[in-house]
Amino acid sequence: MSSPGEKRGGGEDGEDEALEFSFYDEDDFEAFPEAEGDCDQGVLGFRDPFSGEVKPRILLMGLRRSGKSSIQKVVFHKMSPNETLFLESTNKICREDVSNSSFVSFQIWDFPGQIDFFDPTFDYEMIFRGTGALIFVIDSQDDYVEALSRLHLTVTRAYKVNPDINFEVFIHKVDGLSDDHKIEKQRDIHKRANDDLADAGLERIHLSFYLTSIYDHSIFEAFSKVVQKLIPQLPTLENLLNIFISNSGIEKAFLFDVVSKIYIATDSSPVDMQTYELCCDMIDVVIDISCIYGLSGDDAGSPYDKESMAIIHLNNTTVMYLKEVTKFLALVCFLREESFERKGLIDYNFHCFKKAIEEVFDVRLKVQKSRKLLSQRRWSKQAVPNGTHPQHH
Image (cartoon, rainbow, N blue to C red; front, side, top):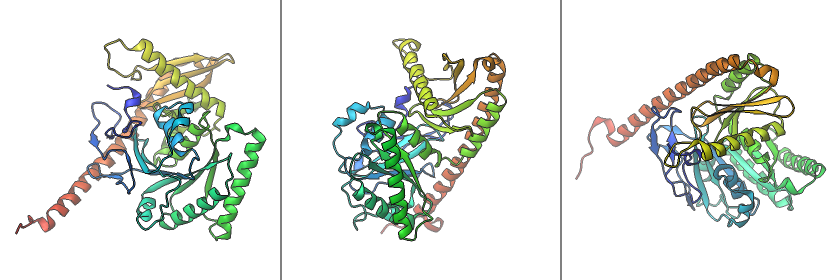
């Protein structure tokens, strides 16, 4: 078994073969090789013909040097923010598959800022037609008049092709701004962007705005909210978390993707940024300590497995409790010390929660198998029309 960092298709150089895992259990998953996740000037395919599943696509767009590639490297490749200073400017369309679990499975397309993707040589209709979310990155420390103009053009074109796209605006590089300046920038960009849409008679287009920086956890939280919108099982997951915490005396619970530290679901109570940062730090601590003390020198196993569990007592009578859900997912809970005294009840409820999650995975697996069979039938019909073998002359 490889380490969590190796579960994702495509390494930093983008040349590793991407794999899609259809199910959480090591004994039951099927892996289908896909096209290599690299950069190309043309448009790359996004469908795996063998699995019969179309992955949601996330587009990263914005002007040059706005920070698009840095976001991708920090969130999905664990690159240190300081190392991104040495990244070269992107001059090709880069595609990467992210397949950490059945819930977190999508593609990221990184568009160079200088490229005119509305050029006739690019089939932008095909690009937008298969897109689940479009993230437009605006450099908050630069003059954003041109960026707002490009945002308006991109959003209006994309909406005409696919009205179901989620439009996300990352007001990026806010780490160098004061809190008041951040709010002022967000209010100004929000007003200008929506005014432009209103002038074009497109008030029905909804833009979501996030203040982000790669130097804190804001970029992870923003990406979490983007990815959650692409998970059809999200209401079910949130409902399961609500039932779990209400019956266990837990104040807050997150379902995390261990590799990227994106939380794919949480309960209905508001998310506090400090709480989210503590969860990310806890996951890092568990993985790091497991790598150092949990594996023998000749052990090729994963530092995160079904035995992974951690308890951290904070100095404010709060307890953090982490439990493994699947090989890709972890449940991180916050509760009071007096509630943690009923650990047996919490563990029993967690067992019930985990079984419910497995059932959700089972449903998705059955859907994927059905799509796979339908896809194979279509391919066979295309290969042998009307049931007759093609004649060779």
